[in-house]
Length: 349
Image (cartoon, rainbow, N blue to C red; front, side, top):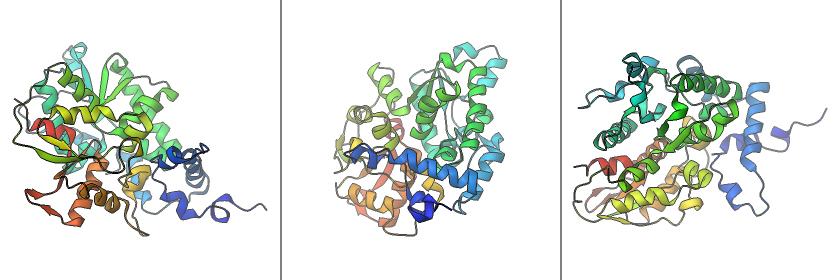
């Protein structure tokens, strides 16, 4: 009997260590596509052998039953918007009122900004920017489900396609192929925009950094004066910078936010360094070697910045945790991680 590839040639742990950040492919001189092959190995382990880390059992089960890895009920999908001084309408409500055609933008909130308390602040900041700019927007609310990025990267292709088909049906029912979908999660953006077409879902999807830049360029988003110059460094998301070559646009947003002194990390742009949460690792423990977010935090602190700007909910979580673990305090206070939308919302006029 032929030896199995995993275990005999490739260590089982190595298959699950991959962050799917694409850094290996970016650096490889002979263009080996490591990530696709590793995901294929995971797919075989999950769907054929039923062998995968025990931490993923709950994540898979929650995705199957509730459409999100946190296991929260779909009815709680719009709870993050409670208490805002303006309406955050759902597509269903607007359709019932005969106002669906008024929608200019659908905000795809994503699971993290919906259920994670820290990232809920980002969702609230983004819709505050949309409201201030006069953008007619809506959300799906309880009809939104995980895009399936987590399931696909972890090798559960069947679950990914189930989730994707459900979302595509919902988006087409509301005719969202005619509108712009804004996603504040790079993983949602990449999956909706680049992978859903494989299943017949073709939508115009933009990350929130690009949309915020557009609003600033069009003069729709007015900003007040900054408190004063503050050194800031920017952590590029792998799924924007490396997978989609989106590097300059978020920096344009930072440059408009006057008073910020950008200090680049040694690894930035397409050469960025993963936060440690990609490839489903957000839901797995690191038990060997240096934690990835600890190393990235060290790189950020080496710039002397007071703020680490992010553009991804997982990056925000990992950098916030890394900074907390480092327990570093600058003269002006603790070094903190903030999303681009949060940096702008404090300046709205």
